[in-house]
Length: 173
Image (tube, rainbow, N blue to C red; front, side, top):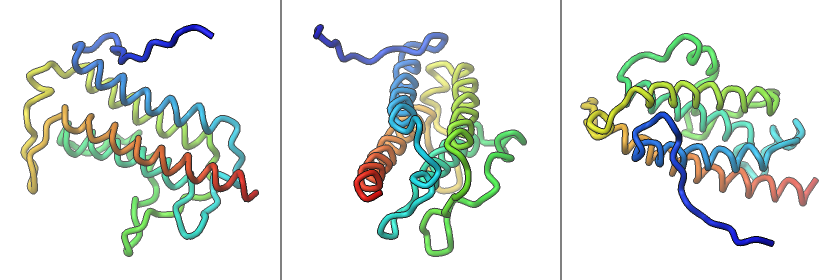
């Protein structure tokens, strides 16, 4: 077996620094998509010990990515195509994630990809000055750079939860 080189790439078409962060975001997504290939509906929808289902976590990842893009970075309403992807709210009154059931893996992955495509499109328009220019919201100021950092962190966190759920489900079913 040959030697592996572990390094961060750069998405082409972006300022190199921005392209590196976006490559990281894409890398986290790649690992989720690859791990879930062929996942059946039962495992996608099942909740274990009161935890969220894999489907609910996938819905949440997409919704949070859309929200950070539109609310914080673009400071605008969701585009109609994006709004139509989210028929459910993110959370219940008790703060837990809404349970998403009955959507196929293909539907979840298509939603994730549509949101990511919009994010990549909008970030293609950003230069390094805009990348570091704070957006002044009611409760905080935030830069697009920090938003992407947070999205990498957020998705990686939930990737760990998804992989742990998958291990648990595969050993109990």
